[in-house]
Length: 207
Length: 331
Image (cartoon, rainbow over all chains, first blue to last red; front, side):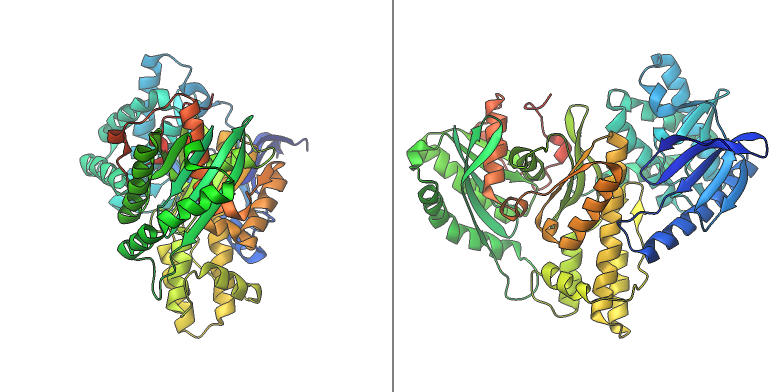
């Protein structure tokens, strides 16, 4: 089985390999020597299981995510479909303004679909979105959870807002387009979520 | 140019005198006087009174230690924020008075950015780090990205030092509790599960604190609770730092702030850095804690890059955001 490291993130290794004749991606949460074994093992097992559960559930509600093939809680590994697209982080700054607007609206719509089913992604950054087949695919649900709380939905979007300001600062105004898409697709009170985001910004220390 | 810096954001009042030697900060003097509360935490007004009492003698002692005269000082720099209002106001009043009487320029600096710049200015090899800034009041992961100093992650409630102090107070330790907790943790053997609370790139310590206090009430060994508290909070800090490094693709990590003296935290961050093939830097203790030299150094960098401040610009800002600083001295 040929295996190639696609990406080595802070938390996990993403390997491209073969599984039952298919090209797959294995997300393997690596052990970290800096933390004690009790924390390391528990954190890895918990995050692996939670992520797999959320991916499966997101898919069942029509949100684009990788298809799951295998899970190993001891190794901290999830084997899933390989998405041959581009990270939104890598394309957002270089596409035309009109395309960027459209993309951001789509992002908002996808997040709304998650929130409609109480799925909180937990780490919505442009590094965690793959653009493929004109759809936004979400990856990395490791910090996600199930919640219907307004606070959690607000924080979910706020993380994206902060991430865009740090990484796409020239285009951070595009977050407004994300909210347009979100408002269109969200089945609850979207204005309450938007207000919550403003509240979170105000709450931030030293703001 | 010789720059004098006054630090007074919280419990320490510090005066530092430095010169810029080819991009390296040469410290001529760095004196600090720290307010020790009799019991409880830092009371802002009492700390400010402490600073007002000691700033004048500290200034005289600093020039003497540096082997210079007041007339030789070319620039007066002060900590403009963030911090405790009364303390900031005491430091800035001294700075303004000094600048006016010496007829020298005045410049206010951001305290968090100063912690980063002193690392770049004094630690060999440190050029573009991610800073894990951990003090009583502040817990921020800062890095230079797209022209600004950005906060990649920070505490949503209290600073890690404050969390440790609160816990220490609850178990009857004297301020500062950090070093005592570190000592107790050394003989901790059992890990007691504590909530690992990271939201995105931000951290929350209140829940952890509540649980730790609960363990103490339930009769768990203090050493084990201290050990568990350190291991959990430091792992959280290390993780957020690592994620910031991965996100910004920076290969250096710098520690700053009073809590950076904790050997366990240093060891963890160093291990993380090594495993990433990155460099780990920690400045000497005298510039890790709140100090005047780092204020002088940043003021010098800002002034030499062309920044000027009038008296009107010298208003303090308790909520001075790291990302509000106009960075004119870096590419």
